[in-house]
Structures are given as C-alpha cells and as structure tokens.
Image (cartoon, rainbow, N blue to C red):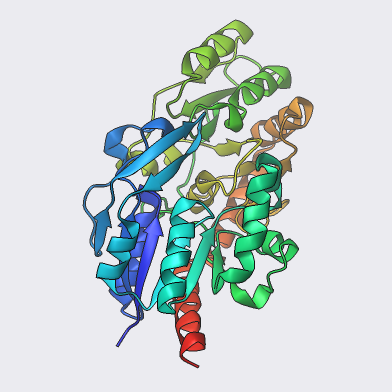
Length: 371
C-alpha cells in the first residue's frame, strides 16, 4: 500500500497543480494536500488566479494572514493539527519554517511520523531574514527527517546549516509547462522583451525600465511587455512614459493565457533583487525563450544557465542589464543559440523528474522510520 503523505502547502497556485496531480496519479505515494489558506489577498494576485477545484485529495484551512509588502504573507492556520490527525499520514511535508511547520513538527514527533520540509530558499535568501529567523532555521534543520528543495542552490544553503546533502532531494519548482512548447518566431518587427511577475519592489522592474532606456534602442527596434499586477503599476507606467520606453502593461496573465503570452515574446527578463526561484524562468525556458536572469534567482544554475540559455546579470546593475538587452535585441544568432539552449535544458529537466524526487524523499523517510 502506498504511504499516505499530508502536504501542508501555503495556498493553491496554478504552477503546483501538475506536481500534486502527478503525485496522486502515479500511485507510489497517497497525497492529501492541506492548504493553509484559500488565497493570499496581500499577494497582488486576483482571487480567480487561485484554483478552487483539484483532481487530488485536498482541503482548505481557515487562517490569519499578515501581509508583507509584495512578499508572501505570514500565515497562521487554524486546525492544522486536527486535519493532520484526520488524514492519518505516514509522512508530513510542510513548507518552509513558519508557524505551520512548527505545529506539524510537534504533531509528528508525538506520533513518530517523519516530517519533511520543502524549501525554496537559497543562500541569497538569508540577507532578507532576521537573526531570529536564521536561528529558527538552524534549530529546525536537524530536527526534520529530510528536505525537498526547489533548486540546487537550496542544497548549498542547507549544507551551510549543517544538513547532509544525502538528506536533501532537489525537485525544481514546479510549473505547468504543458502549453508552453517552443514556437518558431518571426523577427520582422520589434524584438519583444517579456517581464512577467508581480509589480512589487523586489522585482526591480523600475531598474529594468531604466536599463531599457539606457540601452539606446532606435524607434521600432525593441519593446517591453510587462505582465502582472501590483502596487507599482501606476509608477512604472509613468516612468516608462517619462523615459520614452515603449512599454506595454496588459495586466496579469490567467493560467490559460500563458502559451500565447510567452509565444508572442522574443526573450524573457527577470532582474529581481529577491527571487527564491523564479517560476517564470522555468516557463520561459519551456517556451524556448532566451533568458536574462538575475544572479539571485534560485533557478540560476538549473534552469537558467549562463551561456547556454541565459545571460546572467547582477541585480541593480543598470549598465549590465542594458548590455544584456542590447545583445539579445541586436544579435539574432545569440537569440537563436540561447533559445536552443532553453529547449535542451527543458528536456533535461522534465516535470516527471521532480515528481520522482518527491516520491524518493517520502519513501526514504518512511522506510528509515520503520527500520
């Protein structure tokens, strides 16, 4: 019989649906997803973006949330222990190191059930954490039965916390890439640079607009398409107009529209100063796009590889970003080579490999406890 695994996930988001559906469909583990909240009102996403029905067992908990200026809110769920007891899991997976994980750890230790921690954090993330948060992470790390991380950079962070790499499985941050096959692109008109994400300070979209202006493109040579919603939209629109940057702001993208949005772009730019992974990089690679990627994105090294499919830039360096934009716009051979690299990297990292990593982590934790 497949071991039962209770997954305490923050909130239903479209890019995790394929992962949880595959876990349920393959039958090697029996997942029950316990969402800490139905949505995150402070996360700058429309309510309709959060799926309300799933093809795997799931439930929603009531919760209190505290917004954090463009980042994921702090969530305090209610009745998590009651839901875990009702699920009767052989293993628990909880997200990061917050209140839900602390509650799950207490529950699991009392019942001798292994607890795995899923983490997107990288060594770059530590600069955004308080001393207390870093201390909590160090105290919790040896008490977890194992870890699942969203990138290879996550392994390095855990190594610095004293975690043996043998206790860590890498399952790249999931994404729904089913409709993002690479397309042939015509370049008769403007080269379109796509930036997709929440319009919040961490994304450094103001710096991207500055760098685009600094790049010195001729009229009709290139344009920016900035997709997303957030508190900075009016400010970014005014900045682009003031600098004469041809920028479009069509709003957020519904999951079903991703294929057309990526298919209409010639390259993808993610220049964030804080980016634990960067799902858009995985989506852009699956769509066969050249990538301009912030060094601080967790996807760098796995999905965005310098020289193969990406130009990796230092966030905040307008000159470096402008130079990367000029190369992508003015060197069609480079665009073609990086696009081919994105297709090759996507083939090297199929979604099934991430599902298998989850399965290995759960099966190993259950087997170790039984012995």
